[in-house]
Length: 250
Length: 318
Ligand SMILES: Nc1ncnc2c1ncn2[C@@H]1O[C@H](COP(=O)(O)OP(=O)(O)OP(=O)(O)O)[C@@H](O)[C@H]1O
Ligand SMILES: [Mg+2]
Image (tube, rainbow over all chains, first blue to last red; front, side, top):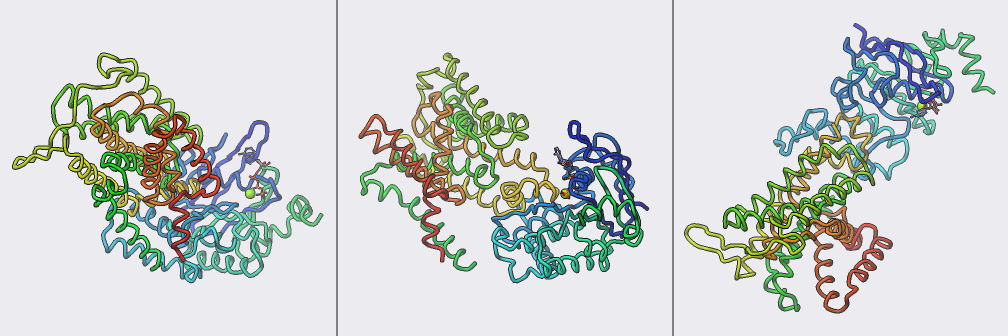
């Protein structure tokens, strides 16, 4: 069954139409990339799915239910987690504390004022797992705000992952990273997709990453749907080359 | 990690030791016991404010409203209903907390300066009611004609009215319970959601924390404890007047919290102690004591944005 079905969504900012009548369906286990030139509306499209914004027109269906009007927190409870183009973490807390909050909230403990030893132990163990998975163990007790950009972004991804999402939205996960960091993050995403069968939609400018990871690619341009297909289809698509690759080359 | 934990424990021990023995050294250094009670009561107010300001990241400039409601609640209970110190305190807490719970939903969607402004506005409403409603509140002259009463434990009576040391220890016990609860909450998963909101509201929201609701709860807790402080303040003075509700009182709490250090648990208490002592000393020296205090505050904020405790902590932690 289809996990995410975005139906003809539009977002108007005054006279600017940032997203214009775009549809997309994502199947469970899929890794979809969304690409397009700067200002194409990719982030706005994510905002409509995650509830940061509500669409001017159209619907967002998640797991067969209409979530178009739900608040962000409620979409998270249903299994939609996201990261942001500009990293959003808790800078004055350590990585461990950042992850711990995410794990606790995901475990439904957000209103608890008391926690049993057992529950606390489980939370801590899960945090350790997440740290190991991301290779952040050695830096776990450092303040996130003091870490390198790449580590901050990895922390944010692990926080989203701590929510045990059914759909993970990543907005340019490798933005501003060096080659090694880009490689590490790419491997991490690949592992999540392959081993955990996690459904992922990612926005990405780095074509090496896109072609390495994506099952299917959707292309936006000036708010409009331009093309969709396998990496090979997209690479061969002339409209895409004209709008996107052409622009990048120019 | 270990060093920080040790420092924290040492700081806690020092604070409780100083507070526990206050009546015995206060007079030796030229103070008097009521001054200590005042510092602890206002310190509780500032620490309550800081639960919201320092640990949830929300600045209220209207906490005097709930402080004042606590004070009037306590005073009016004794004056009009029942001569019981215990009931007076309970009523003060109840009145302030209920008011905060009702006003909360109207303001929790606001952020930053807007939130601060609207909390002032609500505060001023209560101020004008107390000011105008002469027949019940005593208006500008304040609520008089009552005093705190001895506490009857059945087998014995504690005369908190004539024995300032006994009253100080009553204040200290309630202070301990209140800050104990706040510390406990801050160490819980719920407390960590508040830190999350302070650190990054957007991230908190997209972790699935219903931010407005958690701010509302934090607001109620904070206002509940500030109304306890207000009730104790009324009992300390055997008197309440509308100034307890006035926006400058809210400002005093903010000053205390920032002065002492709003990122440290004990900072606001230290800020309150400095405030109370300076006020006591300066007001006997000069009419313009407020300007001197203001100057001191500005200097601290300019040069030590983390407050007095922030300076000390930087010296202590390796
Ligand atoms: N909140 C907003 N208010 C007004 N205009 C907005 C808002 N958010 C985005 N826009 C505009 O909508 C258009 C699409 O922006 P969006 O951020 O979605 O693009 P993008 O594809 O993510 O670009 P980039 O690759 O640079 O991240 C841009 O012209 C942008 O200026
Ligand atoms: Mg973008």
